[in-house]
Amino acid sequence: MERTTACPDWAERLTSGRSIIPPPIFASEAERALAIFKELKIVDAPGSPTFGDSCAQWVFDLVASIFGAYDESSGRRLITEWFVLIPKKNSKSTIAAGIMMTALIMNWRQSAEFAILAPTVEVANNAFAPSRDMVQKDDDLEALMHVQTHIKSITHRESNATLKVVAADSNTVGGKKSVGTLIDELWLFGKQSGAENMLREAIGGLASRPEGFVIYLTTQSDDPPAGVFRQKLQYARDVRDGKIIDPGFVPVIFEHPPEMVASKAHLLAENLALVNPNLDYSVDRAFLEREFKKAKESGDESFIGFMAKHGNVEIGLALRSDRWAGAEFWEDAGTGPKTLDEIIERSDVIDVGLDGGGLDDLFGLAVIGRDKESRKWLSWSKAWAHPSVLERRKSEAPRFNDFAADGDLTLVKRIGDDVEEIVSIISQIEASGLLDKIGCDPAGIGGVLEALADAGIPEEKIIGVSQGWRLGGAIKTAERKLAEGVLIHSGCRLMAWCVGNAKVEPRANSILITKQASGFAKIDPLMALFNAVSLMSLNPDNNRIIQGYVIL
Image (cartoon, rainbow, N blue to C red; front, top):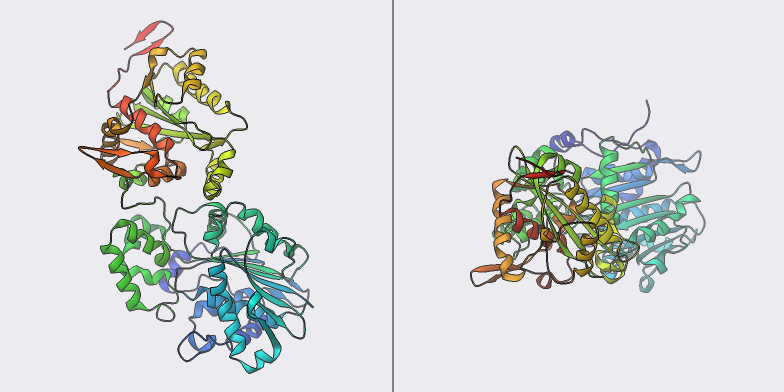
């Protein structure tokens, strides 16, 4: 039977309390590692117990899987990557320290390098402290290891192998030949520009170290997953579900089954135990239940943040306290057409909204078609940006690259390419005979107007949509149509992000959603949607003009 690391029955295993971690390939190696690991002390726990005395079974399963993948006869590790997604307070940093100390002790390579890479100095400190304490509180280990606190390094006195804990950047990881690398809090790396290349450098030692390994250890993100974290998370899920065959990669993902998520049962306090394997060990049950109640009473934003960190619930849409009301219905409305061609095929009339276009902005386009049969509003959106936005908005660069990979954002090579593509889309709609109007913010779109005119789009179809408080009617219409299930969209992550970014400012009898209030967070495609909504709410005529004939 071919060896596999897939775990297609993971949901049933979690529900029944069985392990989701594959057993060791070489039992003797696993036992040898466990004998060492179980003797290491957890100094920051009351009474400084050993791992053997104070750990849940899943920790031993993980250690056995990692070290039991090593084939002593060939000097090769048959599994080289582990991805572990686990909620906060499940002793992640302490377990990481124990695993890497075990690797340092078992290592045979002279002057080998082991590393715990952390995204920040604070996280690096959290990871180093347990490692240091394990050595200093054990006479035998202290005789064998040399601790250098100032550089966060532990050296094996006989082999000169080192374990270093570093706050990673391109300078600290470049050229490394690590035998073993543990990457702590991968979700934070997902927010860093250039993190993918940096991590590629960090694990480059695997190419010349056949016994090497890398472990990604992380909690869920407090924002929609992005960058290298999203990539690894999706890859791990695909391996787990058998969609990708990779026997060298082990996914260990503590998250709720899809059926539970669909029924919202994953948001119940009694189901937190399912994804907290260290409950009643490092995770205090009473604390977890109390914090759950506090978060629930503090509002949606606080509760979503709590569930992300303590329940591994992936955030699809950031629901802020000052959020747009339509955000609450946005995810459920993601059942619409996925392509522009489908909207054209299904609609009797189409309106287009445009917004943005500055060098540090997105240029957003939104298309709303009215379904010929159901009369529902079918929405499709796209955005463009100049590559300079990746430099100007470095904090969002990983997310923009994700949207570009999805096909929902185009990073144009030169100024003007975005206008050409927008005009091409609008011309396609006009050629179908379905274009009603194009709504846009009159400010700053002179180039677009000229290009539309050159493409033969009738001037009377281009409408300036009043912004500010005058847009309040379209905003309220959009949220009402979303709540009614009348406005549906393609479900693209770009728009979900924009919707999550939108901040509402009450103003007299109206509301404002402005780019200024949203700050660095982009909302241009959402503003384009409001412009399109303002036109579609006028209930445009569905007469179609084709080759001079009116089709009623």
